[in-house]
Image (cartoon, rainbow, N blue to C red; front, side, top):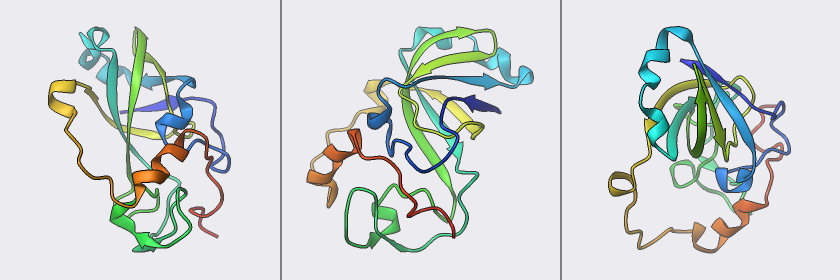
Length: 154
């Protein structure tokens, strides 16, 4: 569908969640054949991005996530090495220039394949959360922790 053109060129040292990339601006360059599908997107302040973790290979069902020191079940984490390596980010839409979307809060590698874009609609997408499991305290660290080598295949 398109590629993200941002400033992260290597996995080590990247933000681990959009909250750690709050001020990072970038752009999504959409293939020309999909440009018409961007009509009316400027009316939304935020969009949901689904993308392929194209540099991720293999997976383990028990992982030590960035926000913890003990092993956790893969599906209770947001670890990038997954059976279906699909990522999700909610970013601020700053504007559109033809087939390019200008965005803020992006935490993805340069040239990551974009699978889909959806408008973020609080009425649809915001839920009353009553529990965040083992992340209850650790989630606050996502704003400043950076990626290390633990999910890079050796």
